Length: 334
Image 1 (tube, rainbow, N blue to C red):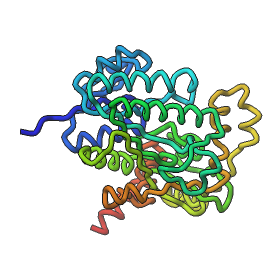
Image 2: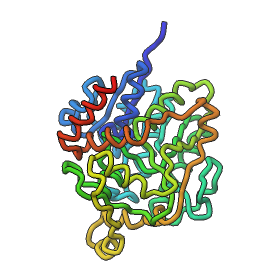
Image 3: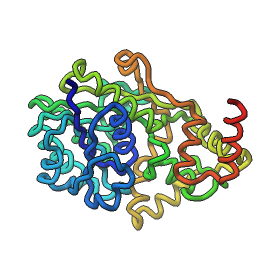
Image 4: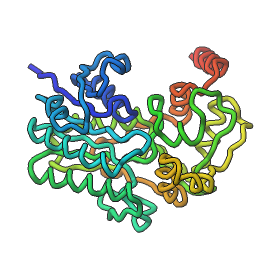
């Protein structure tokens, strides 16, 4: 008899948490999602068991994790707010809950941990010498997870570049390149011309996490993998593909207003946090997925145009006429 496995999702309304929950559910996992106002968000994932709780409260996380086999720690302060006060206490609560229940922690990792000495190709063994405040916090977060693994808590970190997808709003694509809820009339590109950039389509990333979790018997107590995703030798290509997918190939591609961002960052916390990440747009930063491919055989990979089409539709940037023409194209091809 196969027992149903339970995954607690912290951050289930965010892109990584939501997509990972869907990927696990497709494999028969029971999904439990914690939120401060579950009644207001349960419609986003009706198949999940929603429980009330706050990731900043240790008791809430502990209760939500009762009998869980997996805890997906995909919770982050919205809009980058209060990282210094929130990020580390939240991971401490997750570690305590995992230890009490014998659950493995899954963490969607970022490239913030690395500084220029590790660029341009990041491996799991690359030195983590961050040059930003958020990067230092992420290094400490992972250090706490490593110490927890030494104390008996199983940990899986899957690191990726910038996320995009139909169910994420807190992303460079949705917040800095196009305007959600509006047809695409222009695209803003944050990077320098000719500089490569790594993008991670969230459904592919979540599928990767689910496949790794399925190989629990092959995972060490502390495991980390790098997800390559969509690597673009010239990051501007993403902006160009957005125009084409949106049906406006002649729409202007604008430069990101970094100077204005720096001028306004003393007054707008989000701008301050975004400005701190500018260094990741000045040089190519790619993730080496050799270890991941060796473990899984291949990396899930949705073609770029299809991924962008789903993303733009999800954030309501495709006009109905564009959607209808795409549907007709698919129907005629069939």
